[in-house]
Image (cartoon, rainbow, N blue to C red):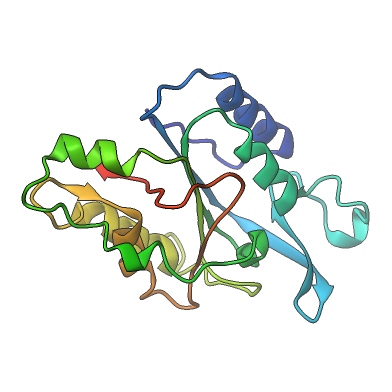
Length: 210
């Protein structure tokens, strides 16, 4: 199921997260959250606080308490508390790399994106989703990122869409975190990936063609 919230206010985002928090999930259910919009950062020498900017966010000078902004820490905590076992957050916004301490690769050393010949599709899905997932991917670091050409996708979103359309390139049509990472690393500035909250070692997130 896909839900799109266009030009949301802070209250609308809060309500949508509350909806997902109240849902009941099965062990293999996965939740992808994609935020595309603007961002704000306050700090010096790369130390500070990152925020998401929504449709009713006021200019910084008019909202010194940042009550109309969504801080990365608040956003991260609320998503962590959603009861779904497997959550993957993508943020396409300026300064989104301030979301958390980045990890440069998605479990690249494991090589988990290829299904061994002696493992069935069903077995691979079960093995990949055996551990709790809390991963994020952002369109850049603590910096401005390009919106792309007018009425077109940003460079980051374009690479994500290319990855999804590829289907992972394997015979079973499964796209893993590692596959996503190989596509988005072509974008400029360099996207950032990391784990947050209660993410477990060996965790993964799968996009499965039907």
